[in-house]
Length: 355
Ligand SMILES: Nc1ncnc2c1ncn2[C@@H]1O[C@H](COP(=O)(O)OP(=O)(O)OP(=O)(O)O)[C@@H](O)[C@H]1O
Image (tube, rainbow, N blue to C red):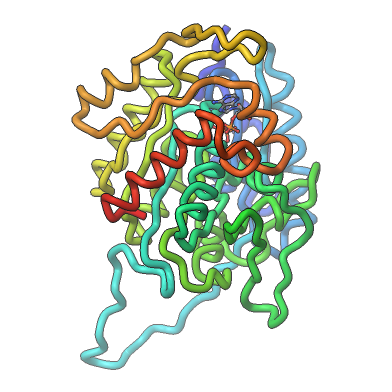
C-alpha cells in the first residue's frame, strides 16, 4: 500500500500543539513535509524557548506516523527559530533592501547539485566534483545542505565540531583541497537537530553567510533531494551560476529529475547539465559491464529538455568504497576511469566558466 501525503497529514492533525491548542499542522509547526515512497520527513519548527516543552510533541508525531501500517522511514527534525520583531523604519526615502538573488562576498560562483529522488548519488557526485575541481587548481568550497541526510563529513573524511572563535562566524573544515561545511557537523548523531537561531531556511543562509569560506572560485552546494524549501531558498536568495541535476537512468528517477529541472527553470536558475549516475555496472571481479538500471535514459531526457549531458558515470564498487572511506575516488584512485570521468566534468565546467 502506498502511503499518501493526505494520510500523513491526517495523522499529524491528530497531534495537538499544547501552546496554541490547535493541531500541529494548523499551528504551523510542520514544515518542509516530504512523503516519498512511504518515507516521511519533515521539519518541526518551534521557537527556541519552546524546544524542551515541544520535544515530546515532536516525538509523538513521529511515533504516530511510525504506527501507520506500511510506513517507511520517518524523520522529524526539530529546528528552533527566532524572529525578532524589527521596529518599523519610518525614515522617508530610505533605499529599499535588495530582494533578488544575492552574491556571497568572496564566492565567485555557486553551483547547486540537485536530484529529484534520494539515493541517486548526488552527494557522491558533489564530493567527487569538488575534489576534481580542487585537483584542477580551483579554490573550491562544498556546502552540504542536505539537512535530512548530511553525508559529506563521511565522504570527505571530516569529523569534529567546527570552531567559532568569535561566536558569530563559523570556521569551515578542510580536506582534499576542499573547504567544507555541513549541517551534519553542527548536530550530534542520533539526536533531533535543534538549530539555534533562524529556522531551517535561515540555517542555509547562515551557512552561506556566516561560514568563513574565504575566497572561492566556486562553491558546490549538495542539496537535499526533491523540490522543497531548501532548494527554493537557495535559488531565490543566492545568485547561482546554475544547477546540475543527477539522476539514474530509471524512469522513476528521471520523472523526479524532470520536476527538479522544471523548478529551477521556474526560478530562472540556469541548468548547467545533467549527470547520469549508475549508468552501467562494472563488475569489480571481471570488469564485465551491464546496464543494471537501463542505460542512456538521462541522455535522452537531457536531449528532450535541451540541457547538456555532462557525464555518464558507472556503478562501481570502488566509487562507494571510496565515498564510505572518506577519500572520494578522484582522490583515492585518481587514475581510475570513474575518477577521470569526474575530472573531465570539472574541466568542462571550468571551460564553460561555470566553475
Ligand atoms: N556510481 C556509483 N557507484 C557505486 N556506488 C555509488 C555510486 N554513486 C553513489 N553510490 C553509493 O550509493 C549510495 C547513495 O549515494 P549518495 O549518498 O551519493 O546519494 P544521494 O543522492 O546523495 O542520496 P541522499 O538523497 O540520501 O542524500 C552511497 O552509498 C554511495 O556510495
